[in-house]
Structures are given as C-alpha cells and as structure tokens.
Length: 179
Image (cartoon, rainbow, N blue to C red; front, side, top):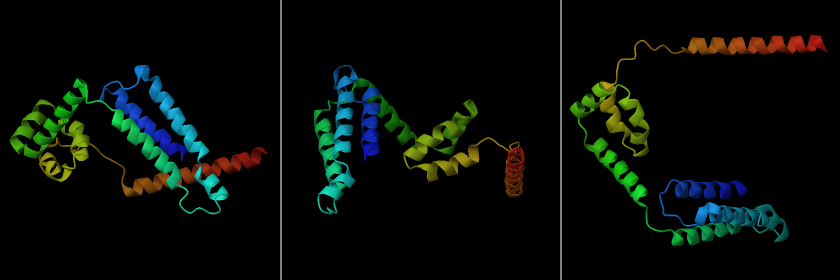
C-alpha cells in the first residue's frame, strides 16, 4: 500500500516540479508534507491490520484506496490553471501529433534527409500518441539502410547460454575445491 501512495505522490511531484501547474505549495515543502501524511495514513490503515481486527472484513483494501482518492481529489481541487510553460509544452505536443497524423512521405523524407536520426528520436512520441501503425508504414520505407548492423542469431544466443552454464559449473567446482 505504501508503494502506491509513494508512486502517486511521486507522480504529482513530478508534474508539479515540471511546471505543468502553477506553484501550489511554497517551496515544495507542502507537497513533501502531503506525501509524508499520506504515507503515514497508508501505514496506519494497513489492509492486513484491518482484516485481522475487523473480524474478516473482505473489502479491507478499499479503505486505504478511499483515503488516497479523497486526498487526491482535494489536491486536484486546489490545483491552479496550467502555467505558461505547461501550455507551451501542451501546444507543442498537440502540434506534433497533428503533424504525425497528416504528414506525407515527401515531408518525412525531407526531415530524414536533414537529420538521419529523426525517425528514431520521434518514434517514442508517435507510439505514445497511438499513431505507430500509420507512421511506422511510412517511416519503414524512409529509414536509412542498416544492412551493416548484425545482431546475434538464435544459435549464437544458445551458444552464449551454454558458455554461461559452463562458466558457472567451473566456478562451482573451483569453489568446492577451495573449501
């Protein structure tokens, strides 16, 4: 339970620290205090403790989840509007999404000609927008040839496994002889 609260507070702190919302707590100490309070509440209302003391309450995890939900709801109500930096980032992201949706092969080819690593750098963002199938079909045709790149084959991976197994056996024998 504590990890859920820690992750939630970490996410809020990351968004808050990136300037996506205006400063809610002076110096960030209020956010740290909120995180500590939620952590303490989560530890105090541990699901197994409730299960043991409430005579077999089957919905014990609901109580800490409700506490976290109420705390986050209260935090969300106090959030201010997006900052100027947050709005710029949002506009850039939405503009890139529109470009990915409407870009044709010649436009992408021009970008790849200017910067051969363009496709590799933009691929994670395209995947995050859920536009990978359409973009991937066009990008596959335009990607630079990587015939020089050789990877391990299945046989090589198996040989690597056998090599590792042999090394472990030899280490085990050496350790046994040393004792």
